[in-house]
Image 1: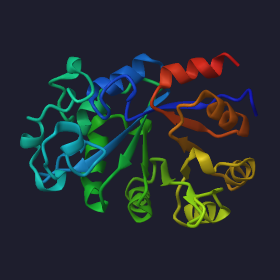
Image 2: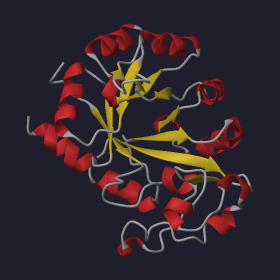
Image 3: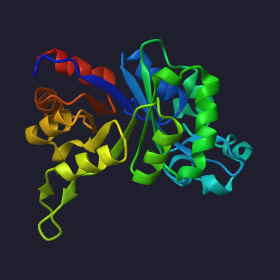
Length: 251
């Protein structure tokens, strides 16, 4: 499988080089040649969908606003770029619509739902209005929300995010198990998007044998990316999409 093509997905855009989940970060991912970009979304108090990983703005803006309890007008006034580098000062918290409009032909956007199912009707409307429905993938850690997204938007691929479990006493990593595959199939999902450290050849093969797809996050080490590509994963999420593609191309 070493020669197979692997999808390179920019994590929160190209978040190594630009402030995560901002328009500039996603544009940088496209410029670097990422096959896809991944973003995180929340629903505001006034039912607008905005990009943010955390459920509040403190880490990114220095000001504390819970997104679900704050109007988009207030959130849009915050500086959401200067924390990364002064040259990004003034970058706003984007609406999902702004990101959807940037998706080039032939590329995809992975939308990670960071809140609950209350966002889904608004998400469906926003995606349909964008004209980019064929380029959207839904992902999330909350199984019920991801499953409901698949019911509401059956034509959109939906993948369940899972972290690598650890032994409680020793901290030793536990390889991903086949029960994840069974759960994904029962929920009607299209595949899994798992933390890379728990991926084994047996797991990759079992996912594909079940007719599902397998993506991994978040890989910034070239040797680990090469290992995963050799195992046959379908896509690798990375903070450095352009750089990592170049590293993989050297081998």
